[in-house]
Image (cartoon, rainbow, N blue to C red; front, top):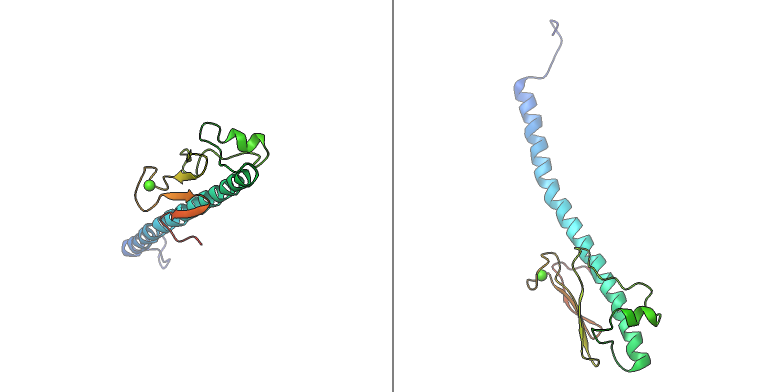
Length: 135
Ligand SMILES: [Ca+2]
């Protein structure tokens, strides 16, 4: 360094590094929250679309498809072109039905049954809406 030319002192560099570390520490959790909310919203939207197809089936045939023929019967009868099988966490949607009622479920963010993050539609009604308020 030439005389009279100013550079950064070690303290200044440390301050910059600390500020960057703090910003990273704040932004990563915010990113994760936004990402989790977006996935949950996408899953709820997908499930709502499946529920609409199930309701159309019910209106036409006076029954919901049994689990053994779901989702093929929705696709084969043009109630829904491609029934999504996996939620946005790549877990299988759980569909149960006795013909007169049904339940469609995603285990949500934690990918296991239970917790406040499960998303459940029962007979067309969103009965469990996940970890976040998305509506
Ligand atoms: Ca769960």
